[in-house]
Amino acid sequence: MPKVPINLYNAHGSRLVSKVRNSLNEVIRVESDFGKTLTEVRTTFDKKGRPLKRVVEKRRGKKNVERTVFKYEGIYDIRRKTIIDRFINGRKVQKIIKSEVLKKEDGRNFLTRLILSYTPHKKDSRAETQIIEELSTHKHRRYIKTTARRNEEGLLSAKTIEGNVKHLKQLAKLPYLYFRGYNLKDFLMSISHYAKVLQKVPNRHIDVFFASLSPKVSANSSSIDGFGFLTFDMSKLKSQSRIVDAVNHEYRHQYQESLIEKFEEKGTVKSFLRRLFHPFKFEYAKKCKFELENYISSEVDEKKYRQQFMELDARVAGSKARDEFLAETRLLDELFPYSKELFTGNDEFFKLITPI
Image 1 (cartoon, rainbow, N blue to C red):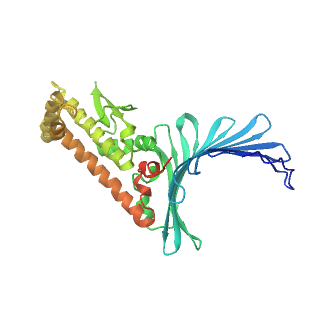
Image 2 (image 1 turned 90 degrees about the vertical axis):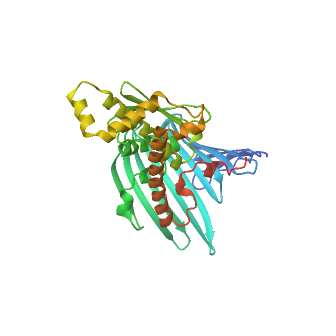
Image 3 (image 1 turned 45 degrees about the horizontal axis):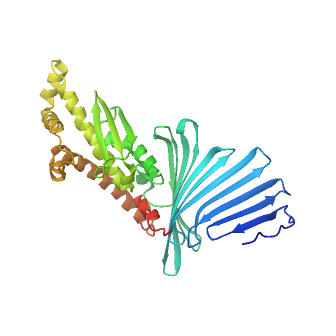
């Protein structure tokens, strides 16, 4: 398309400088404050003309540059996710993750959305605000709003909650509520603190890594000299419930190995008393040690791998944690009945339905 002719400034000191559009891209340039500020909007579209990405850059002089990047997923008028990053002079000052679903019922539109907004601070710490709300016609609004501060390790403090729904006191105690708006990697890191408590290794030093693993493996656990190491393959962990299961499964393995280490100590009064007063744990540790020394991986024999006591035990731990997460999800679904799959934390809910 040809460029739009240059316009004169309007009464507010703004004018359209240019607008260029083809099938996949559009660039709009606007001056405001009688030429002191230049705003450029660059949009990329899919083949059906729906926006995939938009960059809004506002320049006032040579040194003051504000840049906002919008990334879109999903189908615009049904369910969508928008990720917004805002920068001032190259420094990120805000991130917003907005997930929305639209449902029509009895001639009314119901928009349910989950909005996480945070301001980065030093060393990956940040201040967060999360809003879960349902909007419809007739000025209807049902909502929950939480705030928190997160340190660089993902631990939350100074948590608050407000809203106009039932069960606010119960909601405030839920272990996963404050993390619902997180991207999957952030979610995994943040729930790990709770998983350590659930699996009885709160004080064990455990490092978490991310890497591509073999086709049948989404996560693994190992220990060396009393230190734990977990590795997760995010390409195989596409929902929050799957992550809760996998994280607790692997921390259960860390619990198993921690007991092996404790009962392997010999020749001390403490070790003798431990075996004397905790016979069931001692038998558990012996069983785990035997299997660890004769471990069968899923790549060698899938059936025998799944039948091992250590794996059965870890699957139970993962499944119980997942059930707790899904019970919390059902409560949110009851409070926001038009939310569809918004609270499942399923990344594919937004990605796979976008035809490019």
